[in-house]
Figure 1 (tube, rainbow, N blue to C red):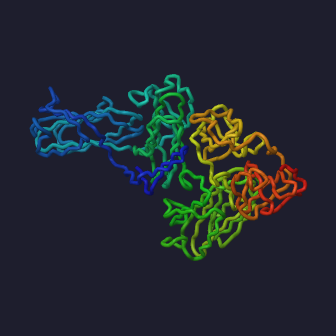
Figure 2 (cartoon, one colour):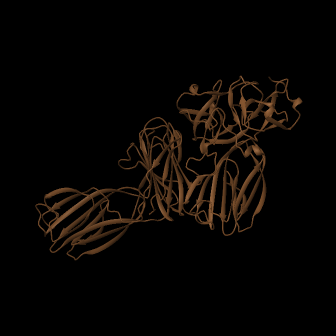
Figure 3 (cartoon, rainbow, N blue to C red):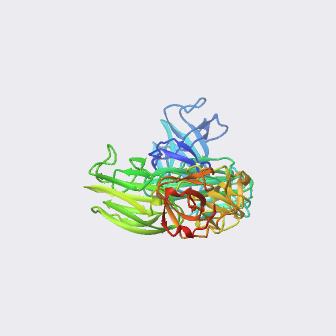
Length: 598
């Protein structure tokens, strides 16, 4: 049904930022299933009469005894057997194939679907059966007359696409028995809180199973499954995510290589007590699992279509893209012509207009946050495109796609202002904020603004919605605002009144934002550009605490100064600090108009 994972996969614990390698292998292609754990009862007559001579567990009803006996106490002729088993089947159409010498009957859920109870040479029968998703009782009756004895029972799904998920809900945490509710649903994205999916379903200790069959193009797909509590994801009956455990709302991501065709997805979930939520998303995989790279993640393909699995991946720096291969290859052993590359990277910027310059020979496409900005996917000699873009403050995902046909090969991407060429470093550590173990969920607002700083006067970066999981990394002095990592590794500040803490203590968070200082909405019209790597301090002097470093070319707003202009107070990315003025250049405004604040 699908090739198993043709390249190594990563299971990523998104909230804890733990990366666990997943063992690569090969998903089986379409083949018949024979089930497992059949209970076989063997009789010393042709009619299944009286007590069985012996019982045993057979892993499959696939036997070729020839002229021999099936077991002790039974001869080689005039005997019979009955096998029963319960097998889980996804909703859909199945073709059952039975070959027997001599008589055979097949029952599914007590219904006779095949009756060939007669002496016969080895004969094959097929029956097409429509079943619902869930457990099904199978029974095979068989008798042997004279001559050789054999029987084989198997089935295979005749997949048909479905437009909705088949959802089954159980009033126990084990998916046991019959569901109390079965219905069709458009997706799996639920935050029930302390409630339940339906009045007939208990709010605690319930479970659910969803199945769907859908067409996929060949490629790598990124599946993200989140749940509170236990969750499992199957693809064509192969278990790919298995977190069947009590846990707070936690997300897991896996990349899966699929062949073109129909594939069946199955999600299983249980809730123990307290809050209940589950969500599944999937899309073609772009960039590394987990994202949030400050360097370009390059995926190199030995075809000009970005098709299939990349031959290799590598990190290609943290400024612009400047690849001028001429007639050489990007790497040893890689072709010089008819190849393609996809670069992905996250860039954090202050909000303002930018100009992007893109030069390529041959085709190129450029996306910001999945929005197509430049589309020159054509054969061309070296051509430069100038594209203005007004970016909001915050972190954005850049994606550059390129193909080389024949001849010269080059691609170059830069942008202005130059602070974007050296993306701002996160303060204190120089890296993105690290989760602290304190988590929350958006609960008391349908949509919640994420801002550059702890207050409504700060710019809005993005929005999160009810049910989104947040990892808390810092708070302001009175803990009325908290800095969070949200979906897509979005980093910003939210008002604590609209979230519910699901794990940890807010008071344990480090204090990063205050309740005093210049109003973030105030501007002086004065801006500086750093001339080198500059230290950002909490006050106007080298004796003050180091907040972090600003790279070369960073542009920031000046909001204060010392009387002698030796230190400037700046605001950048929602953080306020001081820099030593000899290391910066005034690029707009008049410094004397800036108030003395230190």
